[in-house]
Length: 123
Ligand code: FES
Image (cartoon, rainbow, N blue to C red; front, top):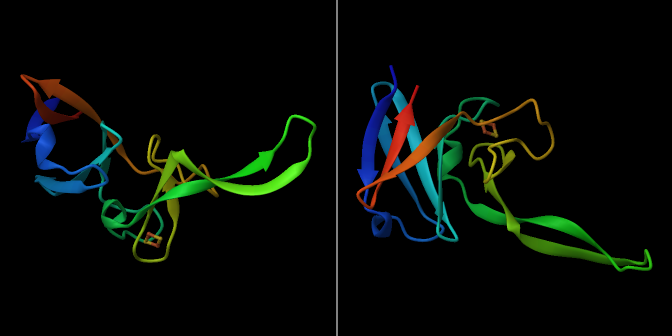
């Protein structure tokens, strides 16, 4: 049976910020970015680091014009990455999937809004 846990009011997490909640033995990072909320277990699948507490940075994308000319690289603010503080593994914020190896994924939890507050649901 699923369990739903209240995290906080939305404005208690700054944009770009994170709140860690503990449910039993599971630490969950609730991250806010651009008005959206994401929840992942605060456990990097590499070696167990606190991935949700790492810095967030924009991904890099290639800048190619419509004629196929390469114009260098750009920061992609629509693809923010979570960088695990232990060894720098990067995960796409929107999916929790590792940037370099899609077999590595942060465990994701559903975010629910009830009466204006942020909740996470554990299966
Ligand atoms: S434990 Fe996260 S990068 Fe190694």
